[in-house]
Amino acid sequence: MRPLQSPLSAGGIGKSQSAGGKSARPPRKINATLEDVLRAAHHLLKNKGRFYSIYPATRTADLFQGLRRFHLEPKRVQFVHSRDREEARLVLVEALKEGKTQVKILPPFVLYDSEGRYTLQAEEVFR
Image (cartoon, rainbow, N blue to C red; front, side, top):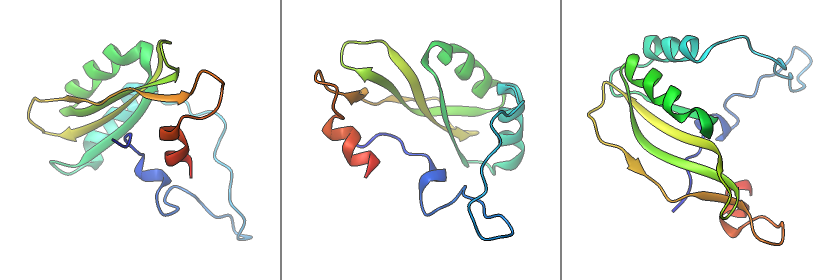
């Protein structure tokens, strides 16, 4: 099963061009809180619109609480681990605005094998 993928990485969406035609670099620091982002998502999404998030795994409870506060129902969740048998570092979440309560927990996504090489799953995503 493929991990959740950000729509920003597909088809060049999310890349901006400067006036000279070269890729513009994004700002290094964004001063927005989780609440700011979720409020904007709630405002911009139509009903049944999808919201994707990559967030620190240790803050999953905060993310879920915020999603629900802004009527964004978690639908698919996948934890990202650096290596098998290590704690998750990130959580990938797909949420649906005004969605019904039901969430699918996907198998963990592991980046590196025991020898420090990308797993087959990771290689497939990073191609």
